[in-house]
Length: 316
Image (cartoon, rainbow, N blue to C red; front, side, top):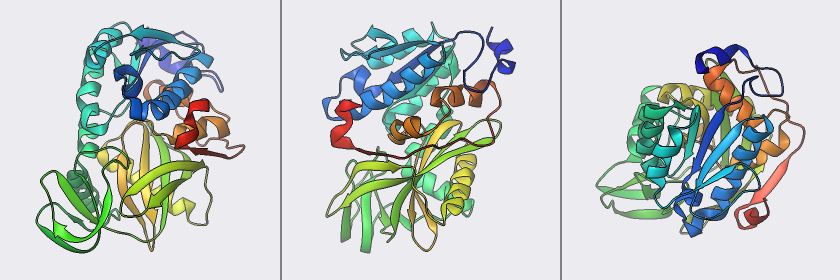
């Protein structure tokens, strides 16, 4: 059935045949309290979207339940992905980048992966190698140090890490093993959300609500965010996703200074989808499916704006 579905899309629904889809989110599936609100909001957004397109959706959970989809109770997140993906026509995993490569590979072995390929995930997860790869493609990135001494205005972050966890500013020091230093860029903290299939479909440019003190922390976002340089940021995001081999949904974090500097690449659905799903006419689940099985539209229709704070995600 899978090979016959690529021609069956219509405008606002997904495909004429019903698919069974696994959506696995790490915080919900593994029971990680400090990330459960953000994880549940992303998971709920995706599950509701796929279900609204008439698909059957299964998701692993350590206990938390959504108001739709089929919950599969699990004690081991990796084992649940292996088991559930074998029963599904397609699967999508959201997890910390350092774990996502191996989990994505399990999906690739069992069914159609709706996310970025495992090789691209592993490249994005290695912040140093990812930066070097972008440098080779002449994509603007901050000056980055992988080892040794540093002196100046730098951001210290884990070489393998997720979002804003463990990120701080520092003026000098010696890098510990497992950390990198990137030059601090003055500018607006933004992101570009993009879906890649046979073609590339930019969704929105988003403003990231970032608190910068000694530590740098992500507090929420505004979707969409418009400025006169949006086209410049979208062009950089498209080039970035192509250079790294991303497929499906990806988020490109950008600091907009004298140039749009790419500071991180998320090869998976990001928190911005919570807002995107509320301001976009199209179903995010349908677009993700089209990136694997059909043709992406030339553009999406944005009808409103949405602001969210991480601390308020319990209501979403």
